[in-house]
Image 1 (cartoon, rainbow, N blue to C red):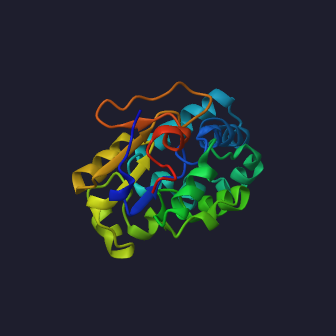
Image 2 (cartoon, rainbow, N blue to C red):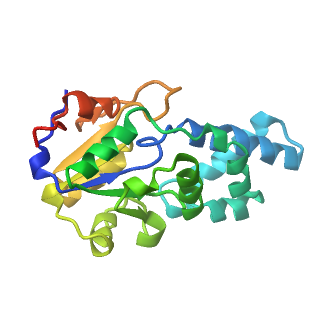
Image 3 (cartoon, rainbow, N blue to C red):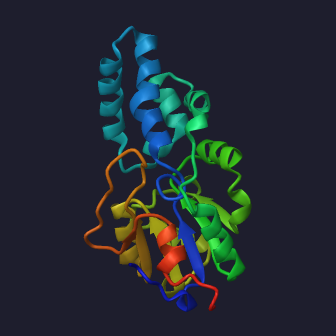
Amino acid sequence: MTVLDWRQIATVFLDMDGTLLDLHFDNHVWLSHVPLRYAERHGLSHDEGREHCVSRYRAAEGTLDWYCVEYWTRELGLDIARLKEEVSHLIAVHPHVVPFLERLRSLGKRVVLVTNAHHKSISLKMRRTGLDPHFDAIVCAHDVGVPKEHPEFWGRLKILEPFEPAHTLLIDDSQPVLRSARDFGMAFVLGVRSPDSRQPDKTFPDYDSISGFRDLLAGGGLTSRE
């Protein structure tokens, strides 16, 4: 069980997709729904559409383009925002997220959503989930100029959203993101082992991790004693 000293934590940075929200929606969009619509447009089988799309995704992986709705709209000739709307009923908040966010706010922590997702994706997901009132700020990597995996991200973020690395917690489902934050000097980082509820759990051999936010509420030191 991961137990944090919450007295040392002033700011909590939270990832969106896979951390607060079930990654099943995004995996379905990019690995099934977009390839299906691409295949229909070009007279291909669904498998052929997926093969083509995935090869294009890989070419952009690790860049802001990978996360950019407008980039993929241009590249694939599809209205990606509309396609996401078509299956937006699949957007789901992970269990125990809302009580966790409420507890953080009650303890006076600064709670910031820090995501690589494009503005249009953030807007859609906040509309569907109603989570936005729980955050003091929402920071999109497209405003920072580089994705969270990039070594320069946290230094640039510090200008937009001042924080002390020694008193900041990051919770994210991406090991490269956790690594970049730790390299920057962030004292507290946690991985999320179950980003997609329909896929096997991930492992984080180099970082502490949680299976879900119940871990922190039930035994992770986030109690009323503070």
